[in-house]
Length: 488
Ligand code: FAD
Image (cartoon, rainbow, N blue to C red):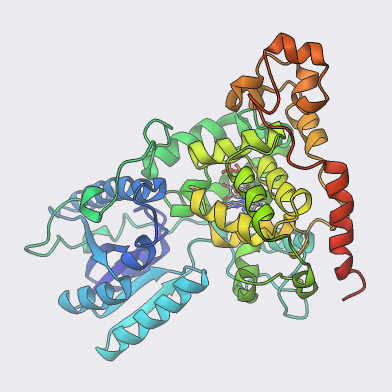
């Protein structure tokens, strides 16, 4: 009996649920990845994520080769296809004469629909499709209220999550013991992973960003964070100029590391008294939380979690488009917002505090529909994940579950004063403001004329005047959001 493991957002060969189950069940196991044209075709030809995936596959291929070798099998490696996954997987499974295809569950609605089609196509030829929980610690129906309903508020969800947690749930799925079942690539199957050019893409600045792909890249980051920075995470995580967070999101997104391994590290450290680890574990719980929100409420992809928020009339038309363009390009005149947008544009990463600040700015200072910002993030973020991104945007626009109350509106200047007090982050991305004194950096339009002259800065020439006045925007937002009041 033979099986095929289909990798998607789980690009590693250790602690891998689908691989574990396949190796236990079958005597010959192949592992495949499909560059799915349905996902890739709409993307620009330079997309960091495609390069990250491609380079991570090279690492995965090498890991499979080593695993095979450790059991005396030469020629084990990844099988790669480029086409529509819904056609390629049934075709490959049939050609390999496998009895079953194993895959780790992907919770995004488009993936769910694709997997249902693949399951149907496989069934026609008598091949089984086995999904496995891998990407989250707790599956979408494992943490429910006493009444058996999903949680819509984070804190009780988190408490129930922590209460349910036992070492069992964080155990690794060992693949080494049964790796003897890994079969060599079939005759005629090309070894190695296609180049970016072969799948129609171009290199990006991934290497220059030192964003090392694959399990090896993830492990290096984890060591850097997990050794001791994790213990200070509670104090450092909110300051974008400080190396506070783990930067592991892209690795979690593509599964080059296992969530169980990370949660185990955090849980052990938290139980040993590390406050930083406890707070970091909470972030991993947010990740599970948003996955179950998306599963139980797939309508959030299009609509507000709280339906009354879809009554809000957002700005539209030419002026709104110009505001949106200024936001995207980091030309709002609010230095922290602009520096954050330059960070995402140049690197594909944005610090969590800044994601909250710029998202709030879009909805509540510019009066633009959160969905525009969400789509922009979806194009740009290396770690883009529909569940977390939608959850984050709906949180910021106040339309989501357990969201920020709408009348609590971030002030972009005080956020800047608080979280980038010395302007280190701002100066990194906006060198034209570098010579301003710290106090003037957060709101250059209020700077003393002498300070502007001394810094050689002319507003409107070297750096934009603010495109909105926060105090006025705040009033407009309160009026705009009034339609949701009492609507529940
Ligand atoms: P750390 O602070 O080290 O956190 C560790 C891990 O926990 C992260 O890698 C991530 O997997 C998870 N995590 C942390 N915060 C959250 C959260 N609020 N929700 C869900 N998971 C979380 N995160 C994404 O992974 N993809 C997205 O597309 C995404 N979009 C966002 C959009 C907005 C508007 C906001 C406010 C937040 C968004 N986040 C998203 C959550 C968070 O900003 C990032 O996960 C975090 O900044 C990634 O950096 P890190 O790996 O250094 O995080």
